[in-house]
Figure 1: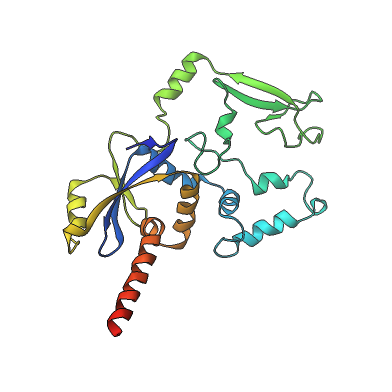
Figure 2: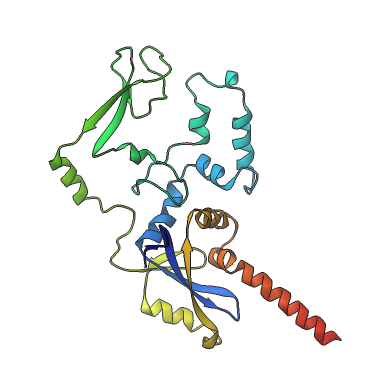
Length: 252
């Protein structure tokens, strides 16, 4: 388990080919961390990732409204780009699979946190250089300030932070509806006991890159059979077409 094939994350699926469905998946820490990170994504980022025209419901229309709104109607301290493309804060640091850019945590360079101060000498500072100065109303904070932690503070912080969300001591079971739990022999046997024909059970290894990551996020909004829909969808359609052809042939 782990990252392979140029940074992609691997996921092993146990598949019932007769029923054409995923029984369950097996993954390591990297996939579970990626999955749990969905909950830390701002709504604006989710809409942007999935494309406003493909969103289920009306969230895409809200995004479209802000995008089309003339800046003259917006409050002077509001930056449309920040609303439509908000910074993502996460214990993971970067989120290369989904975002392909830096997260807010990437402002830490070589152990240094970056802040910004008003170039008019005001006492206020922020980690966002695009906000207005509270004291004088200056449109941006143009003076970069770097806060360097001592080695002792860095070591203390690392003791309490393993990175990501879950530990990598075990593998994790991923259900079709994205329920996640530690891998269990008893749970595996229970799930396999529901399979009518064990000869139809196959293992399928999937490698998830940015495109698959976005598709997975999208499917999680639309179905409770996410893994089957995403990774067996094409096979399911082919199987259905083949079945129709066989049925038609028998009619003659």
